[in-house]
Image 1 (cartoon, rainbow, N blue to C red):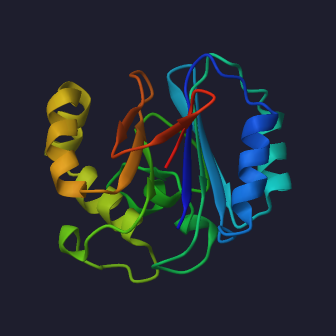
Image 2: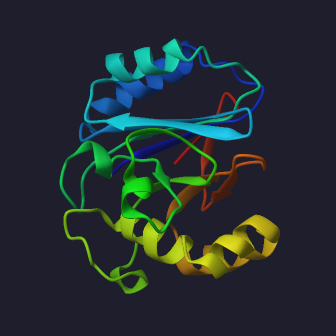
Length: 192
Protein backbone atom coordinates (compact mmCIF):
# COMPACT_ATOMS: atom_id res chain seq x y z
CA UNK A 1 0.00 0.00 0.00
CA UNK A 2 1.23 3.53 -0.79
CA UNK A 3 2.33 6.02 1.81
CA UNK A 4 0.90 9.54 1.77
CA UNK A 5 2.46 12.19 4.00
CA UNK A 6 1.21 15.68 4.86
CA UNK A 7 3.68 18.14 6.41
CA UNK A 8 1.65 21.02 7.83
CA UNK A 9 2.87 24.57 8.40
CA UNK A 10 5.24 24.92 11.31
CA UNK A 11 7.20 21.73 10.64
CA UNK A 12 10.54 21.88 8.81
CA UNK A 13 11.51 19.37 6.14
CA UNK A 14 13.79 17.42 8.47
CA UNK A 15 15.54 14.12 9.16
CA UNK A 16 12.30 12.58 10.46
CA UNK A 17 10.60 13.11 7.09
CA UNK A 18 13.66 11.94 5.16
CA UNK A 19 13.88 8.80 7.32
CA UNK A 20 10.14 8.17 6.81
CA UNK A 21 10.64 8.34 3.04
CA UNK A 22 13.60 5.95 3.15
CA UNK A 23 11.82 3.48 5.45
CA UNK A 24 8.69 3.43 3.31
CA UNK A 25 10.54 3.12 0.01
CA UNK A 26 11.31 -0.56 0.51
CA UNK A 27 7.60 -1.41 0.19
CA UNK A 28 6.69 1.50 -2.12
CA UNK A 29 9.21 1.52 -4.98
CA UNK A 30 6.94 2.46 -7.90
CA UNK A 31 7.45 6.22 -7.68
CA UNK A 32 7.84 9.23 -5.42
CA UNK A 33 6.32 12.66 -5.74
CA UNK A 34 5.77 15.80 -3.73
CA UNK A 35 3.86 19.06 -3.76
CA UNK A 36 5.10 22.22 -2.06
CA UNK A 37 2.79 25.19 -1.54
CA UNK A 38 4.65 28.44 -2.20
CA UNK A 39 3.48 31.96 -3.09
CA UNK A 40 -0.15 30.92 -3.83
CA UNK A 41 1.00 28.21 -6.25
CA UNK A 42 1.87 24.55 -5.90
CA UNK A 43 5.19 23.11 -7.08
CA UNK A 44 4.79 19.49 -8.22
CA UNK A 45 7.62 17.08 -8.99
CA UNK A 46 7.38 13.31 -9.32
CA UNK A 47 9.06 10.32 -10.91
CA UNK A 48 10.09 6.70 -10.64
CA UNK A 49 13.12 7.57 -8.52
CA UNK A 50 14.91 6.66 -5.29
CA UNK A 51 14.40 8.56 -2.04
CA UNK A 52 17.86 10.11 -2.45
CA UNK A 53 16.82 11.76 -5.72
CA UNK A 54 13.44 12.89 -4.33
CA UNK A 55 15.08 14.35 -1.22
CA UNK A 56 17.55 16.25 -3.42
CA UNK A 57 14.64 17.66 -5.47
CA UNK A 58 12.99 18.84 -2.26
CA UNK A 59 16.17 20.22 -0.68
CA UNK A 60 17.00 22.11 -3.89
CA UNK A 61 13.75 24.07 -3.33
CA UNK A 62 14.83 24.92 0.24
CA UNK A 63 11.34 24.40 1.75
CA UNK A 64 10.47 26.61 4.69
CA UNK A 65 8.77 25.41 7.87
CA UNK A 66 5.75 27.62 7.11
CA UNK A 67 5.16 25.91 3.72
CA UNK A 68 2.78 22.95 3.52
CA UNK A 69 4.05 19.86 1.73
CA UNK A 70 2.59 16.59 0.45
CA UNK A 71 4.83 13.57 -0.17
CA UNK A 72 3.73 10.29 -1.75
CA UNK A 73 5.50 6.96 -2.21
CA UNK A 74 3.65 4.69 -4.65
CA UNK A 75 2.91 1.01 -4.83
CA UNK A 76 1.29 0.33 -8.19
CA UNK A 77 -2.12 -1.33 -7.95
CA UNK A 78 -3.49 -0.06 -11.27
CA UNK A 79 -1.92 1.57 -14.30
CA UNK A 80 1.65 1.48 -15.53
CA UNK A 81 4.72 2.23 -13.46
CA UNK A 82 5.73 5.63 -14.86
CA UNK A 83 6.31 9.19 -13.67
CA UNK A 84 2.87 10.33 -14.85
CA UNK A 85 1.21 7.78 -12.52
CA UNK A 86 3.03 9.01 -9.45
CA UNK A 87 1.21 11.32 -7.08
CA UNK A 88 0.40 14.15 -6.69
CA UNK A 89 -2.16 14.61 -9.45
CA UNK A 90 -3.35 18.08 -10.43
CA UNK A 91 -7.14 18.37 -10.22
CA UNK A 92 -7.71 19.31 -13.84
CA UNK A 93 -9.74 17.97 -16.79
CA UNK A 94 -6.72 18.12 -19.11
CA UNK A 95 -4.98 14.73 -18.99
CA UNK A 96 -1.57 16.29 -19.60
CA UNK A 97 -2.02 18.91 -16.87
CA UNK A 98 -3.40 16.31 -14.45
CA UNK A 99 -0.35 14.03 -14.76
CA UNK A 100 2.39 16.63 -15.37
CA UNK A 101 5.49 15.35 -13.51
CA UNK A 102 7.28 18.69 -13.16
CA UNK A 103 5.19 21.85 -12.97
CA UNK A 104 3.87 24.77 -10.97
CA UNK A 105 0.09 24.76 -10.66
CA UNK A 106 -2.64 27.16 -9.62
CA UNK A 107 -5.07 24.22 -9.38
CA UNK A 108 -5.45 22.02 -6.28
CA UNK A 109 -3.45 18.78 -6.16
CA UNK A 110 -4.21 15.39 -4.62
CA UNK A 111 -2.41 12.43 -3.10
CA UNK A 112 -4.19 9.23 -2.12
CA UNK A 113 -3.69 5.92 -0.32
CA UNK A 114 -5.77 2.75 -0.93
CA UNK A 115 -7.85 1.89 -4.00
CA UNK A 116 -10.83 3.86 -5.29
CA UNK A 117 -13.94 1.91 -6.27
CA UNK A 118 -14.11 1.43 -10.04
CA UNK A 119 -17.72 2.65 -9.81
CA UNK A 120 -16.39 6.18 -9.32
CA UNK A 121 -14.87 6.50 -12.81
CA UNK A 122 -14.72 5.22 -16.38
CA UNK A 123 -11.41 3.51 -17.18
CA UNK A 124 -10.88 5.66 -20.29
CA UNK A 125 -7.08 5.54 -20.02
CA UNK A 126 -6.08 2.03 -18.83
CA UNK A 127 -2.42 3.04 -18.62
CA UNK A 128 -3.34 5.38 -15.75
CA UNK A 129 -4.26 4.59 -12.15
CA UNK A 130 -7.54 4.75 -10.27
CA UNK A 131 -6.32 7.93 -8.55
CA UNK A 132 -5.74 9.62 -11.91
CA UNK A 133 -9.24 8.68 -13.08
CA UNK A 134 -10.98 9.93 -9.91
CA UNK A 135 -8.92 13.14 -9.97
CA UNK A 136 -9.40 13.83 -13.69
CA UNK A 137 -13.04 12.72 -14.08
CA UNK A 138 -14.76 13.18 -10.71
CA UNK A 139 -12.90 15.87 -8.78
CA UNK A 140 -12.05 18.01 -11.82
CA UNK A 141 -15.72 18.19 -12.80
CA UNK A 142 -16.44 21.94 -12.74
CA UNK A 143 -19.31 21.61 -10.23
CA UNK A 144 -17.26 19.45 -7.83
CA UNK A 145 -14.20 21.66 -8.18
CA UNK A 146 -16.36 24.71 -7.49
CA UNK A 147 -17.84 23.09 -4.37
CA UNK A 148 -14.36 22.05 -3.21
CA UNK A 149 -13.16 25.65 -3.46
CA UNK A 150 -16.26 27.43 -2.13
CA UNK A 151 -17.69 25.13 0.57
CA UNK A 152 -14.90 22.93 1.87
CA UNK A 153 -16.95 21.71 4.83
CA UNK A 154 -19.76 20.37 2.60
CA UNK A 155 -17.24 18.92 0.14
CA UNK A 156 -15.52 16.99 2.96
CA UNK A 157 -18.86 15.69 4.24
CA UNK A 158 -19.88 14.44 0.78
CA UNK A 159 -16.50 12.97 -0.14
CA UNK A 160 -16.06 11.16 3.19
CA UNK A 161 -19.16 9.17 2.24
CA UNK A 162 -18.00 8.60 -1.33
CA UNK A 163 -14.38 7.69 -0.55
CA UNK A 164 -15.04 5.45 2.47
CA UNK A 165 -11.79 4.39 4.16
CA UNK A 166 -9.51 5.88 1.48
CA UNK A 167 -7.05 8.49 2.69
CA UNK A 168 -6.94 11.61 0.52
CA UNK A 169 -5.06 14.89 0.91
CA UNK A 170 -6.00 17.87 -1.25
CA UNK A 171 -3.68 20.87 -1.28
CA UNK A 172 -5.01 24.24 -2.48
CA UNK A 173 -2.86 27.12 -3.68
CA UNK A 174 -4.50 29.62 -1.30
CA UNK A 175 -6.47 27.57 1.26
CA UNK A 176 -5.40 25.10 3.93
CA UNK A 177 -4.85 21.50 2.84
CA UNK A 178 -7.73 19.14 3.64
CA UNK A 179 -7.40 15.52 4.73
CA UNK A 180 -10.12 12.93 4.11
CA UNK A 181 -10.13 9.61 5.92
CA UNK A 182 -8.29 8.63 9.09
CA UNK A 183 -4.63 9.64 9.21
CA UNK A 184 -2.02 8.82 11.85
CA UNK A 185 -0.01 11.68 13.36
CA UNK A 186 3.60 11.39 14.50
CA UNK A 187 5.66 14.44 15.46
CA UNK A 188 2.84 16.62 14.02
CA UNK A 189 3.22 15.00 10.56
CA UNK A 190 0.21 13.15 9.11
CA UNK A 191 0.67 9.65 7.61
CA UNK A 192 -1.89 7.61 5.69
